[in-house]
Length: 584
Image (cartoon, rainbow, N blue to C red):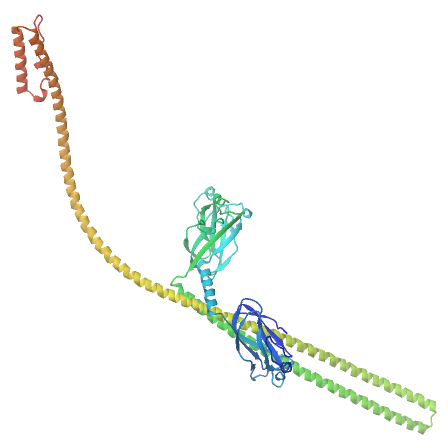
């Protein structure tokens, strides 16, 4: 007989019962007659991977204050086969006198604790840490089925992570953020993505959106958005001008078979100041869990007391009904006996009267028949009354049986509720231990941060010393630079003076070169004229001698008395034109 299954430790369990004894696997050498004197009990896991568990059976003593019968504890790795005992509980132990069977009811308790092997524990912890660190949620979207309207959001299914509920909002045809300043026509070219926390207190998180390149499994060519840190309360946060709609194509791999995949990587951050608040909440949750455990235990005790009281009332009612039925039966028997005696007396009296009055036989027979009919009628009425009482007794007996069945069903339900409450208490205790573990990790993290702060303060002090030294050097360099600037200004002034002198010298040189060129031309012309004169004239005349003499004297005088730069420039020093008839 397999009892109703129960959920505990993340697995489904059931108790198996062989009331008249049973043979287990590999139970060689056991005599069947011996096993038939015992009750076999087994415990079995119905689903999930193999798990190590510590199990203890107890047969509850339903007489108050009496000890339960506990079977030996055992540790076993449960896979698909059950495990238990087939010769630890004798059938003759289950009696009302011993308290283990009351009103044909036996109560069995199974206390067990699941144990996770060290290797499996590390693997589970590693997976949990990876999931917590990544919090990687990938969403697939049928792009053509989304809205065609601008600034209309599509909310994706929410996810649970870091102890909070999160969701992604998307505006496929562009969207406007709060206090938006950009033009709508500009935003319509982009896809807007937002991230939102749905429940819980404000928390700071680092978020990174990615559009997955479905043609590149390595993830190196995914389109990643800039990471951002934000304290999430009730408003969403994200981007509305980072992803262009024309980028979502088969060629880029971001849109394949009308499917777009969005990844959100985020990490929740708890500030050092929030640690005490988290610890306080954890303590409150622990206190609340303990209170729930206490209330559940009290309710279970009250319900058990109520069931026991109901059973006692039912037992008392049964005794009372039985007593009433016995009394009615005795009363009916007495009525029948009295009726029979009265009939005998009446018959005797009739006989005496017949003899005394010497009545005829026919009259006497008729009278006796009449009396017998009356007596039979009275007896039939008494029998009918007794039958009615018996029917009432049967009805009361059936009501009592129904009451016993209802009490038994309620008792079973209370046992199930009690078992469920115990499972809840164990789950709450497990959650409490997990919270305490997380708090321990946070304490270690805070201690590490404090150590880093001390090191950073020492580094800051050294940096401040270096800054002060460099500031002094910079001040000295500024003073030296000021002196150098003054010297440079003086040198620039001298250079300007030299430049002005050079410019004046260049002007004078240019004028001198011009005078030299003119003098060279005039001297060349003079030499040519002199040669012609020498070659043409055999004997020069007086007028010619005077002309040469006058020409030389005039130019000598001009060179002595005038400006040397204006040599040969004055028209007054040019030779006079020749007179008519004068030979040159």
